[in-house]
Amino acid sequence: KPSGCARCPFYRTGTGFANTHGTGTNGVLLVSESLNDHEEQEGMTLTGSAGYGFFQRLKRLGVEREEFLITSAISCHAKGHRISSDVLDACSDYVRAAAEQLKVICKEKGLTPVIVALGPIAFRQVMGIREDNPLLKVDYYGYPHWSDKLACWVYAADHPMMLMRGNTH
Image 1: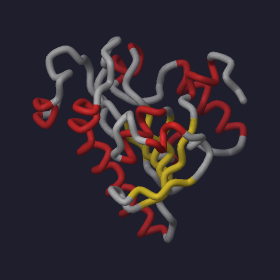
Image 2 (image 1 turned 60 degrees about the vertical axis):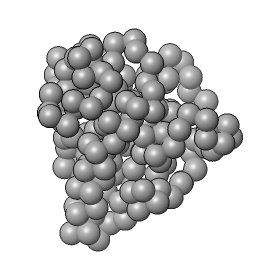
Image 3 (image 1 turned 90 degrees about the horizontal axis):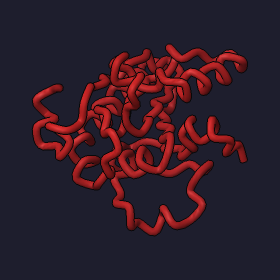
Image 4 (image 1 turned 180 degrees about the vertical axis):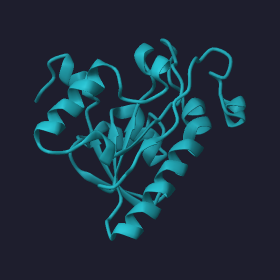
């Protein structure tokens, strides 16, 4: 794990680590929640069964995985631990760095950077809000939100695992 992880409550108990990957050529940063067993082994986010299914659906639309920049709100495998605001704060530098990388790519290509937060933990991380924020009490999925912290648009969506569980509404 990078030295920046030392301030995280999961530094000793969390396992694995995944860096940001992908090209970001479509101007979209996907932020997942945390690593699962398969992603921990691969060292890449969204490579488990949910991520595979998600990208297979997108591929049918002509959208390739490599076009996205992909990272996680929590860069390690939390293995059943509760994701607290302290953990999100500790990992915020990685998400901020990915957002800055996306902005550079988008500026070169003349695109507007967009972050898609996959799940409520990713949304909290990207927006820099705590779990008691009133925004989380309303229907925030499917609407664009402006992030002052990252200076770009954020779109909240269900995590692909929710689709695998049959939550397709």
